[in-house]
Image (cartoon, rainbow, N blue to C red; front, top):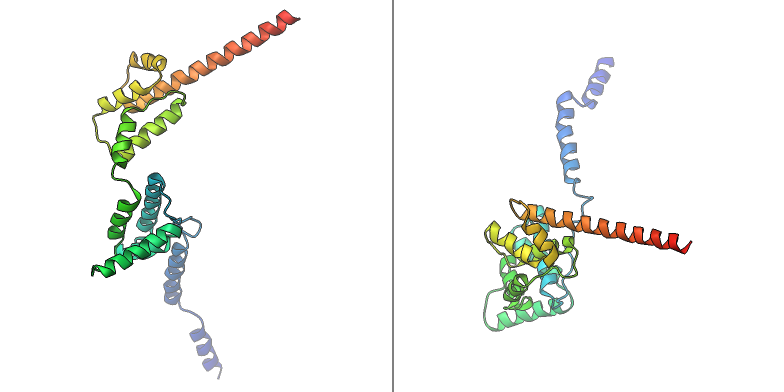
Length: 224
């Protein structure tokens, strides 16, 4: 009787091999929970006629698709759920039109994106941005803002050019006084030119602040 109880107790106790089998399961569960703190939701697209907002929505959606490792068909299914207001009406109308014309259903994100681009990005959008890029000037912008705008426009235009030409365009757009000072310096590329422009701007601001403080002090002393 005692031996039977001991055998039952041993059978109820998990063996070392069983415990080892359970550990990987726990680990894999924790691994699946790793992204719970990340914001992975795709924003809605309501069909606003702003090409930059639409293209930003596409970029955000595709980053999530890539992270989640969705295939083309699942990307499509998720994307259409994010079309709201006018964009949703446009999509429903697209489906009806294709059905009337005897065309196959769209079930691919790549095909849907092609139709979305055609509707929400004007044909001359890229050309307009290229013209803006060529005529971009710093004017009243800070150097930091000018660098951001310069790089953004270059990316939007998908511009591929030699480093020397890129530097020349950037320097040309700086304020005349700043451009002259940057031009006479030694630099190796675009990053160096940006660093110099930021350095000179910081120096000028410090000098102006110093001159203002000195003027204020002199005025106070003369008043006394």
